[in-house]
Length: 237
Image 1 (tube, helix red, strand yellow):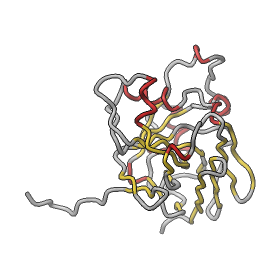
Image 2 (image 1 turned 90 degrees about the vertical axis):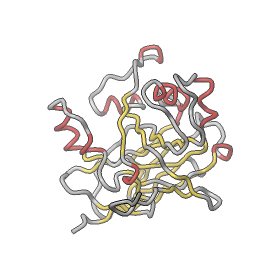
Image 3 (image 1 turned 120 degrees about the vertical axis):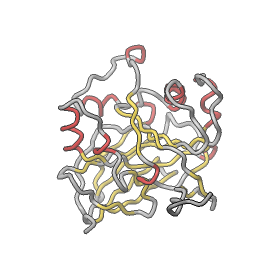
């Protein structure tokens, strides 16, 4: 059978050492740091037992920006940065609900990403009880670093995620401040989706989200282990 249009190219994220990681889906976690939940006007759990259920949304795979640039998007006057740990799955989850203790075995590696957000569109959607798709899933809304195999990162809890914009620190937090850690999130996602090799999970952002302008240079880091460099370009004409 002949395709009626050329097949879109598969999105592939570089892996440290020279390989690539073909991407299947992108899942994103909202409100996964208590300080960010509070700055967005949401309730933050006082204890792990009070955390309820995580908030999930998605981005299309072609939202990934892998060349170190992202154009300021149309339709917004308030583009925000959200620095995030990115988890890459190297194995399929078994059928049914994934046990928390089995979840880490699915992980291939980690990266650092930006969940760029049209904050004014998100606020309008929230006010009207509408989905966030236009605020989150636009072109080049997910700049991302290379992936690093999990064995080279070690224990995540002691690692620090940070973002500098034009040399000024905007966001910073240890990963032990996440409300749901990586195994927790994979367990919760498995209740809703069939997790597969090739999936990416953007794990949520700490406090300090703020506006970006064309020309801004963003440097995201996971300690000195992973670095993301991204420049915000003027809107495409």
